[in-house]
Every structure is written in C-alpha cells, then in structure tokens.
Image (cartoon, rainbow, N blue to C red; front, side, top):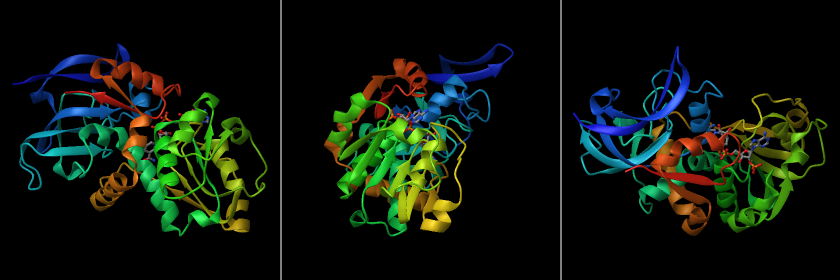
Length: 328
Ligand code: NDP
C-alpha cells in the first residue's frame, strides 16, 4: 500500500468538483506499467475537465491530466522495465483512464513511448499533447504537399499552447507565419517564436463572405467556428488548412465554396488515439525540429499545488504558451 497525492474529479449528489486528495496505489485503474509521475502539463482539455465546462470526463471519479512524464516503477509489458523514462499523452488519459495530475499512474504500456532522445521529461511536457497536436497539423500540411514557397500560413489561437508550438515549428521550417491572437500584448512573444506578422483575432472571428481575398497558402486552426470559416475563405487555390481545436466553438458556419471553387483542403487532426508509429514519428520530429531555446520561451513551470488553479485559468484564455507542472 502506498499513498500519493492526486487531483480527483467527482460528480455525485454533492455536485461536480475537482480537489486534491490522498489516494492509494490500490485505487489505480488497470494497466501493466506503473509510473512515478515527475511532470505533467496543463492542456485546454484539462481545463474543460476540472471546470466541467464540456463533458470530456467519461467516468467518475477521474484523475485529470492528458499528459505525463515519469519513471517506470513496475512493468509486465515487454517494452518497459523499472527505471525507464517514459511519456504518455492522449489515449483517454484524464477522460476515461486516470491521468497525469497525480504522483502515480498505472497505464497500458501500449500508451507509453520512451522519452524521446534529446528531450528532458520537463521539455517533453512543455511540448505535451498540445505540441504533438501542432506537429500533426504541420505534418498534415506537408502531407498535402504544401511548401513555404506557396505563401504565408496562418496560425489561429497563436498565443495558446497548440498555437505557440505551431508558430515555432512552421517558422523553423521556413514558413512566413501570420499569427492570429486576441492578445495584442503578446506580439513581442509571438515574434520571438518566429511569427512574421500578427493579426487581431477579431478580424477573423466575425462572420464574413464564403470567399474572400486569398491571403494564405494554408493554416493551422485551433479555434474552429467562424474563425475557421474565415480562414478557409481566405485560403488560396489548392491551399491546405489543418483543424484541431474548438476554442471559439464547435460549429463551422462555412459553405462548400472554398472546397469546390478553390480546391482548398480541410484536414482534421486528432491526437488522442494511441497510434504508436505516428506518435513516435511525431515526437522524433518534435525533438529534432523544435528549437529548445524557443520552447523554453513559451514555457512556464508551476508546482503541483497550483495545477488546479492553472487548469481553471486555461479555459478563460489566460495561459500563454505551455505550462508544465512539476509533480514529483
Ligand atoms: P489554449 O487555451 O492554450 O489555446 C487556445 C487559444 O485559442 C487561446 O490562447 C486563444 O488564443 C484562442 N481563443 C480562446 N478563446 C477564443 C475565442 N473565443 N475566439 C477565438 N480564439 C480564442 O489551448 P490549447 O492550445 O491547449 O488547445 C487549443 C485547442 O486545440 C483547444 O480547442 C483544444 O481542445 C484543441 N486540442 C485538440 C487536440 C486534438 O487532438 N484535436 C489536442 C490538443 C488540443 P489567443 O489568446 O492567441 O487569441
């Protein structure tokens, strides 16, 4: 029997609530690998989970935290042994299976990858699910043959976690990046990440015509709704937009015009399923293509005791870049 601290979300007659409490390892869910969690991170989904603003939690009680890094303490999985440094993200963590906002995790070894070479556990969590999603978005643009010579790309929700990593990755790969943000005070920050131009998100978030002036070769959209509709309307012939988020809303009030008149492609990006080959490939690219100095500039670190407050803040759009939580 071994006690550990966790954030737990409960929903019962007393209501929906998230709080720190002591748990015992015997209460962990099934899995063939135990991990002493050293780091986690705050993602938008964690904010939705702890506040209950969207039904991301599929069972109660739940330990939130879609990401964690740590050290294996027990394993009956062939790929892992005690002492291995590992990371996990997505795979239902914090939604259907106890996640990373706890000092201990027990998961399927099929959801783990070894800590990518060249990254510390803290750096891996600075990237986290948000950074991995940004990488998948970039790979989606590349997969459709988009190249920097085609023109600028727009990143929406640029000062957020996915947006910040997308700006940094695209700029490092030679793109002219237009960063859309509702926080003009973050212009200097976004430029240090590599943004060439900043646009006020208000420009993109009010309804516009189905086809507008062609401005972008493509884009990475983290906010959905009217913003994504406008991005599609401003994308040039044969452009490509990768959509991964819904910070503005779930709806997509667009028409078929960008698709049938300009050959624009809209690619959906989903980073939650285990898909180990894609995960390993994405993380290898992140370890290689993301400048560690720039990663440090977009990252803040907080102790576990502040994780709950920060998770509440992210849904209010108050977190800049990435927020690593020191757990162990
Ligand atoms: P953050 O909160 O860090 O970033 C979201 C950003 O969106 C904010 O920083 C803000 O950027 C912008 N934003 C917030 N509210 C609005 C609004 N009403 N209208 C327009 N823009 C807004 O979250 P993450 O980066 O962690 O996640 C971004 C999105 O991606 C979320 O919707 C999340 O659920 C989704 N996601 C999806 C994944 C997948 O597998 N598909 C995986 C990971 C995340 P700014 O201040 O610059 O305007």
